[in-house]
Length: 117
Length: 114
Image (cartoon, rainbow over all chains, first blue to last red; front, side, top):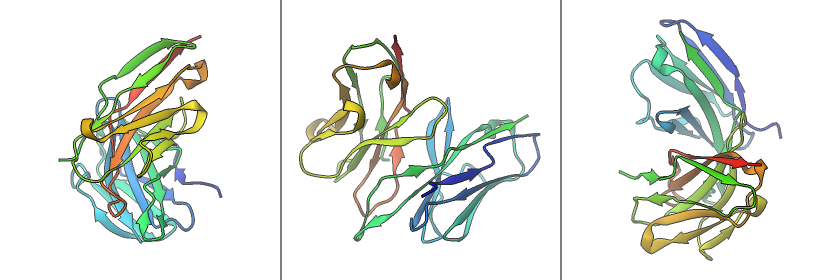
């Protein structure tokens, strides 16, 4: 299996521009998570989906952030307009059910490093 | 609110020294506990996990962790570290297998002097 695939790996943009980060989870996984990692705040959960449905978006910082999962193999995290304080590494992760229970183990992508100037 | 605390932000050790990284969580119910490792420039990967049973959990690369319910702790240990253990270590918690929201601690950066 190729693992969780994220793109782009690096993005540098200017304040006010729209940023779209993409994620392809591991096939067969029915949970998808978006995390943001910064030096100041560590690893923060932004939103997660189960079977393509957003379950908890309480970690999304503000209305400038939105996430979608149109199908089981693709998700996007969009920031519009972007600001310098959005600079971070954004990780996508997926996981799966074992029987009726979530195993709790997350499989992470390589991350998208975003720099907003 | 549920939280995970890692009190050591940066630990520096020499090779062959013993390691213990602290992790405490605030939730009082049934929890699943994890340690993830992030090597420089890489993504996070699972080091070990506790769901139930023996509170002493063994993971990859000689790491182990002990769940002490009365102390709400899940400390990570390794008897003798190597230079290749240089990484950031994250403790994580989810409330039980029916809850998928996994909360991470702020991480502990481990630097090993060769």
